Image (cartoon, rainbow, N blue to C red; front, side):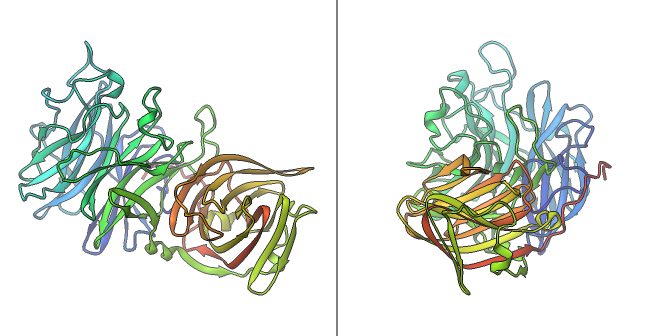
Length: 507
């Protein structure tokens, strides 16, 4: 939602951050429009983690490789170091590069290459091995015991059922340049699909961001919150063992692959989560909009209970708050097919109220394509009257369709496409989150929306990152089967440039 490479909408994938001298560096896995998928790293820079300037491609894949995979960046004395996964013939190793300025990189030789150790990890194909063993993407931290560095990575164990051999591998290094494989920090049996993103200490515990690209039959009981997306594991020590927490293990739930591969970034004692957002896909996996993939707004990671974390709105994203758009009864009168006859709206100076018993309705103003492509921020406080209804924010696609983001008195947050029919508004739910908002009749809602990308926060906590099947062009309010009062409604332009037409020339 914040940053997209200007040269091609499909270029950006996994992301990670690095900070140096009051400048932030956003690295991303990248590929050319007509090239090999995941063939390079790209760089963007920022002074506020919100507004980014593209610096172009900084590292191409080695000529002998099929592709490269995600990395991480750190500093050893005066030298910057990054790692990248070397993919060749369905096998993975990890290679390294160094730089003096974070822009120009020199590859280290094969002598520095990191490989799995067959004492703990699968090496090669054949026999009882899996066809695509992992040794992918070192995430590096200084060792808490003062003994150099410890790294975590996606790996495949050399034992256990084939479908459950995924582990969080581990490497150690005395100098941050040469690495030795050591035993994994998780036990086999979680899932073959686990992908390690990052590790951070929050409170007295260590937390590991671990993502799943798909659900595998027979593995889902360990991942009760829709498996696809970013989850977390917890440990009492930096060296593990990392285990699934009691209760929910969800950070970014993504039933339709809206977001992926959450990673951590520490800023002045606060741990943030970064990830990319992916345009909506149809049943065949084809993209439904032209928006491609974007770097999403950062989220704050907080410990909500001992051994449990969740994502919250990061106040640094207030840098997105631009000009406030005027809203009055005239602007909010339905520009689309809005009110149902049995749904009554009242517009007062400080609030908007709606009575929708046994039905539902929306009121919406039209923004125009350029404003939707720039992005908007919606803030509103909602008070519900009625135990079974719901109310929230509506994003309109056309005069008879849109997208609803609603909260219920029981704390559930529902999202889905909404369609106007002769008998009223119908909704096709796409997701329901029931563990991110405390039950209550009053809720503070914040929505960040740009083109087809949307994020909704309820009472400060992230409820969902969503990619709509269309770009929106209007914004409004929606009520279902209750009385609802909307207080302190504000609508602001984002301080971003509009999304422009595709430019297919590579930098």
